[in-house]
Length: 411
Ligand code: SAJ
Image (cartoon, rainbow, N blue to C red; front, side, top):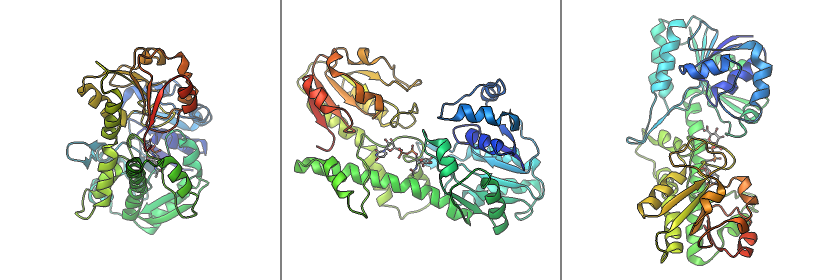
């Protein structure tokens, strides 16, 4: 069993550290945020994710949180890679500072694993040169990029069951890294080189972004023909080689909306990928255009936004398409009322369902939280009975029975 230092105790680093600890490794979880470390030292959790409480309890004996990097056999970097909105470039500052914290402790035979998502070649151009400040050469220390691929909401399940990509800087690095993950991963572990591993991670999320852009474009085209895009996609997906994702109000979160930019930051040859980004980024504008038509003629329209989390049944509002839609609606002079049962921190006030719907002229569903399907529309004290469902997820029959005019994206 190894002594492993995990740098970054967020949605990836913390569960990864706990999984390693619960499988017998000695884990020191390091975070620069003192409040996070203190919370964990007091036996409390700082993030919510299914199964994390139980795992924390079972891993406690082998997991210790600290703000200081210790000597270790393995250093695993799981810090955020923010996206600089102005330049549309990846911001490697946290990854760099993690490497700076590691190199004074690096000894011959140690392994450094980078799980954070980075642009292609960042390991070789940026991370490894910092680690070399230890005086060790590549080969004397081992290095691998092993991108995280777990989906929020099912993080623990996917961390254990998904296949993993291990991109070692040399064969020995790949093999030693595989031996670490094999302790808790039941999926296959595929060995490759570092640059390919960086590219694979970005490719997965870019594939999803392009597929969603296709679904969004189909939704708009179907509207022009008076065809129901949801039926079209469901039927087309019956073909054994077709798998189209769902249209919606836009793509949010810190991965799918960002990774295509990381993938393309050093090439002149991306067209489809960038066009897809633009299709997805302008979906809130399209939803706004539909809503504008619905409330045309109403004086001082009041709009209810149902859901601001970037996707269903989670509290994460990063890069949510709801924000662009709300900003556009405010610029139209509309009054906006927001309801989301999960979102705790959001830049606009989040109120109860009853309050958000009181006096409303159009209820606009942005996030398909499961609980929204159980809303009883009869109880809503709206002023004008209009619903726009951008995810085709509500019980439309019930809303119709309650007297609502219903419009749906892609129909
Ligand atoms: N969305 C649609 N239509 C769909 C599916 C999703 O509009 O059919 C939207 C969602 O509403 C959301 C956005 O796309 O706004 C992204 O959601 P998501 O569920 O597709 O993905 P993320 O960002 O939560 O997690 C992704 C996952 N990547 C892939 O599935 C290839 C996850 O496995 C990665 O670990 C994660 O990115 C990451 O950290 O990179």
